[in-house]
Structure formats: structure tokens, C-alpha cells
Length: 49
Figure 1: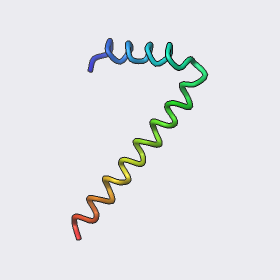
Figure 2: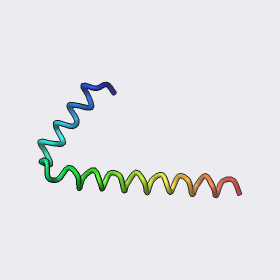
Figure 3: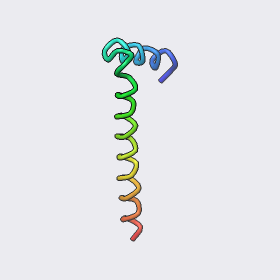
């Protein structure tokens, strides 16, 4: 993805959620990514055994 696509996505998110909701939205995205990465690490560790 290029800069223009990322900028377009950011503008759409801003319009849909408003400036006040973006920090909450990004916090939720961060938690989801962190949880996913923890599960991947757990699977990798269990495969090595």
C-alpha cells in the first residue's frame, strides 16, 4: 500500500468515527494485534516440543 491509500483510509476512519473515537479505536486494534501475536508465539512454542 502506498501513502495515498493509507491517507485515504485515515480520512475515511476520521469521517466515520470522529476525532474523539479514534484513540479508543486504535487502542482496540492494538489489543487485538497483541493478542494475535501472543497466540502465534504460543503455537510456535508448542510446535517445538
